[in-house]
Length: 202
Image (cartoon, rainbow, N blue to C red; front, top):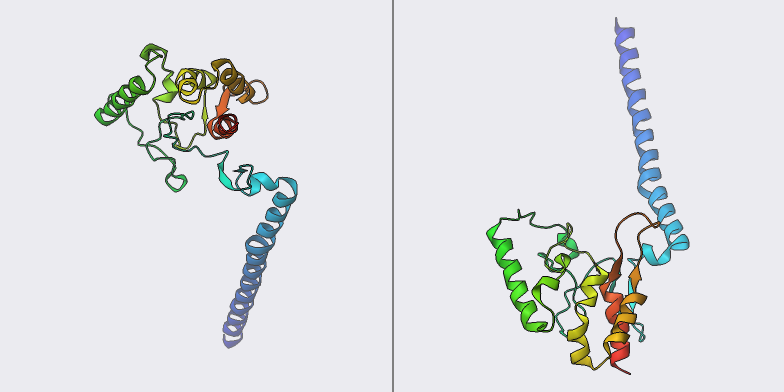
């Protein structure tokens, strides 16, 4: 009987040290080696994406990420989509309001009113829906080419840049469907505005 108890006690002790060793091995593998390896590979194979796809101006100053939209309020620049979270990356998401929600309806009405004031040359029925709707994340950095085109009269009037030149700029920054099949044509607003500022400063 005593021999059996000693064997059981010895077996428990052996299992404990086996589990401890396995735990330490996996902590090192999964908590140290794997993260360091994937980080190193990412820095070598795709350094820009690994560091946040940051965009810099001609002075080398970071002005934002091409993956996260910004709240452009200057009427002489192109504006992006409505963001109920003010493009705060740490608060990704939206209020998920239904179309009948009074807060969303009021926000949409307020935006349309402001649009009419800022863009008197463009009727409301020409206002693309993506300019008055929030994306699922609230961080979308893109608008449709049509949403950029309807802003050209305002920007042309304020900057003096010919509308045809602004249209060429929008066409230059229009990205096609992924693999030619998925998604829609889109324009990155930050990249577009960076080139617009270069034109304005000439």
